[in-house]
Length: 170
Image 1 (cartoon, rainbow, N blue to C red):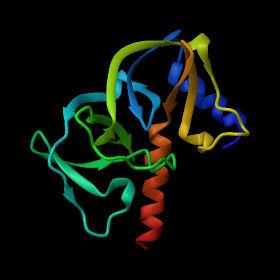
Image 2: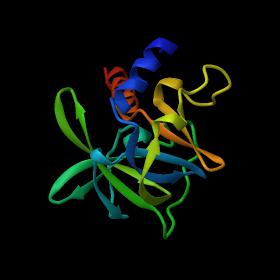
Image 3: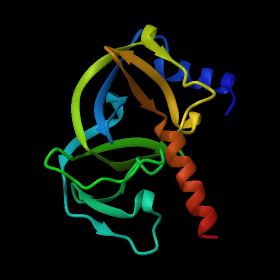
Image 4: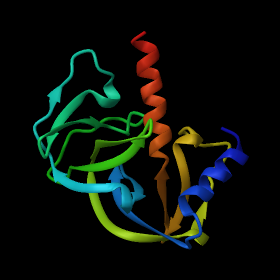
């Protein structure tokens, strides 16, 4: 994705707002944030059912309020090491529009921090060079204190991973 397309996506997440309400969480020592509006619930770890033949990115499902939903590990999309669950590990249940349909997805995290706001003025597009992650998987980076908070583009991640699965499955 080129910088102009990233700039359009960057404007989309902020809209006309100067602040974005987000849920912050940790993956392998990095702080991520997703829009609070897509978060349905934060769960303690639940029993998982492994799906034979599935991709590692979404290799299992969980029971969420009587519905079977996929459990994703977005660390794999970012090329991070998968770590063992700890007492602080949580599942964030989000709802995304996939193919025009509302879709519930669970995301594994190492720790959930807080619901907070991020300032548009502190946000930047990901650099076009020197990034170890795909730039189209990141909506923006937001400076907060002495660190960067990564706002992932969940639609790009899940559409890309879904396309890979469709191609791999024929």
